[in-house]
Image 1: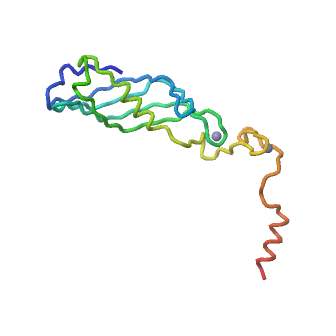
Image 2: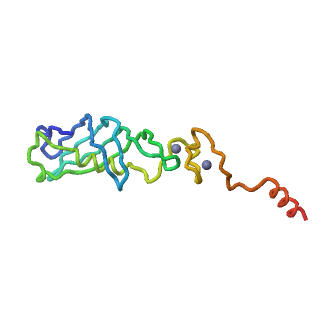
Image 3: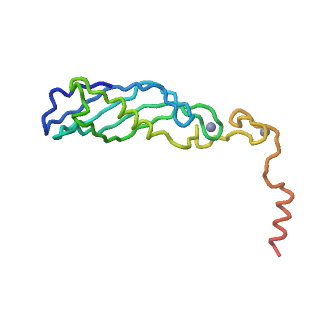
Length: 157
Ligand SMILES: [Zn+2]
Ligand SMILES: [Zn+2]
């Protein structure tokens, strides 16, 4: 996302910019993060002596693999962001590229764990069946109901 700050270079200048940022898919620690579409960007830009100060919001969604069932699902994010770009780093103030900063902020939103739904059943640890689709016949580690009864008797002393 490229913005024009030509008119806002002087210290104390202030403006709000909205736009769209379309990142490429992200390879994050071996996890492939597929971007669903452009992210909405809204930033307030304030010109200080030596730098531009940005505060704003980034909003969009990307595909993540569910930590329980491993299926891909769309994950929506809306994040506050704050960053600065030093004036001396900018070659052309009419074309200031925010993409790197936006990408950094986008990466910060990637959760270490994510589930497709709070009641995702996950996959069977024995046969690998996705239990959201149908349940398998594997024996579960649950306690046998008969043993449970026995336990109750013991506790009744
Ligand atoms: Zn899931
Ligand atoms: Zn199974």
